[in-house]
Structures are given as C-alpha cells and as structure tokens.
Amino acid sequence: MEITINNQPVTVPDGLTVQDLLYRELPDKQNGIALAINNTVIPKTEWPNHYITENDHILIISATQGG
Image (tube, rainbow, N blue to C red; front, side, top):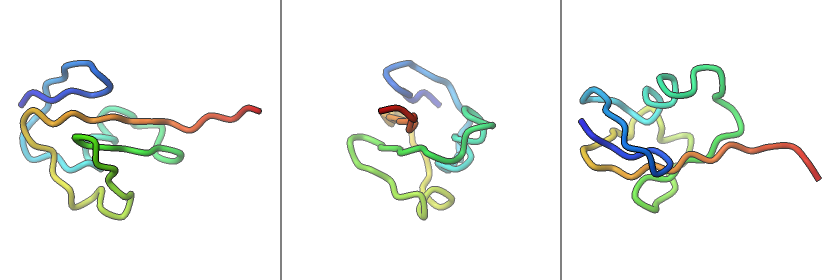
C-alpha cells in the first residue's frame, strides 16, 4: 500500500500498526518520537493498536538535544 512519510512516498505492506511501521522505518530509534497521521497526533499508547491505511500522510518528528 502507498503512504507518505515526511513528504516522501513509501510502499509498505497492508496490516501495519504504527508500532510496526516505526520498527520498520526507525529500528534503532523508539524514544523521543512524536507521530501524526493526517494531521492528528497519535499518542504513543495507541501505536500498537492504530493501523496504517492506504494514502495516510504520516509525520514523524524526532526530538533532538540542544539549546
């Protein structure tokens, strides 16, 4: 299925949850991430149960240190 991650088209298999997608796309980075699908923030507690659907627009933001 076709989705968009951070304005880049990506093909992923059907049936992925947000958690599955993050393990697939960012296997070494699971903390300090915020995620929105179609302009709606998905709380981390919902990641294992929220399924990705065709044409979803996903924004992944990673926290960085600095000052």
